[in-house]
Image 1 (cartoon, one colour):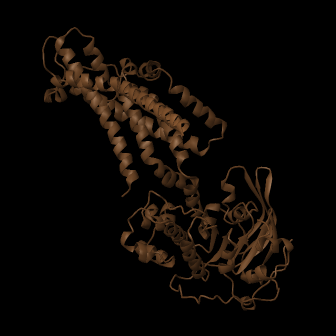
Image 2: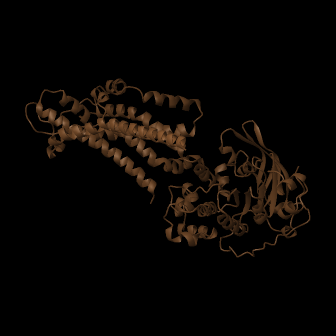
Length: 284
Length: 297
């Protein structure tokens, strides 16, 4: 009897210990996240007003002004990189899921995995040499191409993994109704996996939204509103970088505000993705 | 290999069964005790045969799963395929609508003549064939992204076919599977919100909404409870007037209850094929008898 009591006590102690260890680990993991959010919010909130969203930056020496052009630029860059990256990534993912055994698929999958580990500045150099040098100038297009290349592996692999999760019997159900393979893939398999793919895409977009390095020599920067996609544009990350390394107090203030806007944008994208999934899963 | 074919006398002279099934206006109440004609061993008359399978061989990679099946399937009757696991019965019906070849690494030899036309001919489009030969699967598999209504219309819509009167088609199909009364107030609910038995009837409705001539059922009740099973079996009784039904089943009692004819498969061979009553009461083959009496399988 006392033997089993001792055993029980030991198990209980072990259990308590590992529970506590897990809690501590979680707390440690949360410290950077919470402090980044807190710091950004505390320092940035003071710089946010209507002007910040609507005005152009003021010349050196003058206070005030805003980052309207950088916000607009970031949205343009994200929009166009999605327009390039999502279709290519999703279709590549469909290919990988539909023709998994082919040698070409193995090659594509391997490339995607390698690509996801490439430093983003390298991608910037790629876009620089392929787009900027060819066009003869920095442009929003060049920046978007760089960002699209960065999101491509994530989108591709997420799509592939989620398509593989769709039960084979749903595809068979469609084929059994006399539906052609591509229609079954698009309207049944892809549609079933759509919420999950949307999450993957949103996460890729969120990641790309904060990229700075590849934009430095592709989209470059612009003190004014963007003239068009073939012209250099400002973007929040580059603007934050420029302002943060400057010696001016007012620019530091604005850099914090820009950081807050960027973090909020990324958070909104993440939350939207999560809600989208929950909504679809909980059903009509 | 194949035994002589027996035929009920009342089958002789029944006209050909080509063409679409009749409209769905006659799910008449059938007497509970099905009167099944038992007949002398005679050959099935040619014009009553809907599907003629000739020396069908199917492979997964190098392994031969079906080893030369020859089997005539009569129109507008229920034919059951029974046999122990791995005997090739599922593969067999998946060959009838060319679903077998959907799995990578598979191969089929031999002939499957649907109304005399070999469905494995090069110029036959398997996609179109499957609209004539519908299929119901082992596990209910309604499309989770679609409502009940959309599920019924899925065959048409996914094929890009225009449906002239969708409401009528939905009601008609759901009435045929005796699901209408249960779901008519919630047609926009998700198809997966239904119970397992209801889902399976929805899948049958989805299949017959395409107005196939043949309905293949691959152990349609194996995932269902006894009550749901009874509903689906009743349904099979009602559908047999309009469709040629081939059903694979693990459950011999089920074959006895629903099928006009029964084929016993073993190790990729057709051991015996006859009227269900004959198979269950005086099988000619020893192995059939052993299986049916539960001595193996």
